[in-house]
Image (cartoon, rainbow, N blue to C red; front, side, top):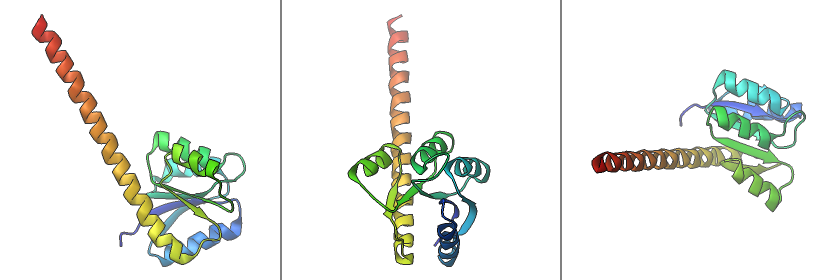
Length: 151
């Protein structure tokens, strides 16, 4: 398994400690622990982690908005965590390009597979974006070539 550099965020100190212990046990390195979404954004832009795990409900900036801000500047796989889930919350997470969603309490046995899933989804999304960009560029070149041929 590849060691990942992971940023975590939760407003509960016990959860931040839990992530630190469990992720280290899984062979990963926690590069930042934030108590709110604003600090998470700042730390992610400073540390450039391989993965983000964040609680949704936090002070200053919730996990969904933090994930959106991070993704606009530094695309990275994101796993959101909440004590409660609802169809609306899951829809918001999907719209924010979040790769996975976990409901508390989190067990160690939940973390490894969800990390793998989030990374796989992220990789597929990135590949799809690159393919779309290439198609767009190809179409633009064809249109330009067509216009030049008409002249």
